Image (cartoon, rainbow over all chains, first blue to last red; front, side, top):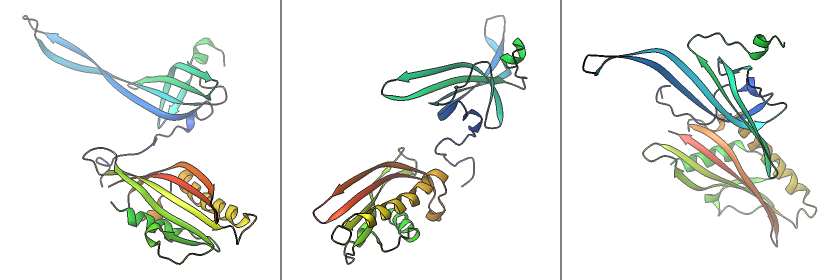
Length: 120
Length: 131
């Protein structure tokens, strides 16, 4: 069966880069392309052009260690992402769970918060 | 949908000392002191119109108490059976299934009981195959 038609099961992305802070149970990958449009004199859209592709990943899983801090750079699969949001849930009837949102775009260079604030 | 082939793959790959390992369909096999019976309780399509299937695998370990009063044999056989399946779950190595396209193998609980004659444990698993 060719790769393009094979249906996949389970988490297949390499999430070892998160394992110190989050054991990933599910990942949602979102990609969006920004677009610009041009209109004619009647207000009709005559051109649509895509100019930037952004990717976000939402990861949910079991919280371990110190979690994953926002402002850090993580590797998921073969790409790096900048963590923009991080959350942790504590419940008296369950294991602590965490989630992060992270993003990248085009060929952008990611600058973690430690680099910007000089807190290495 | 290939249930028999999946069960046969497991029966052929699982080997435990002093234990008779059979398929549920071989219920006429002569009973021995220690038995492991492998069967699929349910098979269902995961998505309508796609050939992906979920199988509920049942592995029953049944050991006569009369021949194993302190349950040492039962515990040994149970541990070795669990170790066999744990390796499949953790390594996700589905080689034993040969050409059957198994893509997932999950644990689904263990039930233990004692009957008038035997110690019994039922290991339950979910197998996913994508044809």
